Picture 1 (cartoon, rainbow, N blue to C red):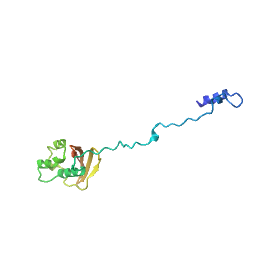
Picture 2: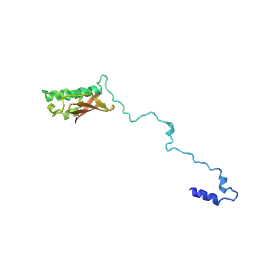
Picture 3: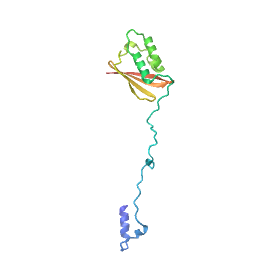
Picture 4: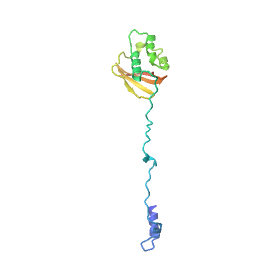
Length: 159
């Protein structure tokens, strides 16, 4: 395109140092434009990556308390029956998790001791609670159902 403009100026030159294109007026540089015409307006302040905290019933235990209570009930305890063990888990577990534990023998639980404080990940609709324990870690997933936190899944990470 520049070659055509330069060629046009040379061909249309009348010898006076002025070209016929000068009648068009001065050359104006293009105005730079932004790819986003609204980029100068700034942020609207809405952070879409933040998940709203779940709605709990008045007086409902917080996620840390529920996770801790469940993890302590899940530990291996000599002499406890399967029914006693499940009864201790039930108040803080979802119906689906309780169904998956229906045939579990509490003697098969891989640890009897929690060795450190809970570490929570996520504060939205799903929270993961991880407890360091003798021989590995207890990992619980919790969700709010019926206005209270419930343990919805349980995993053991061997050390």
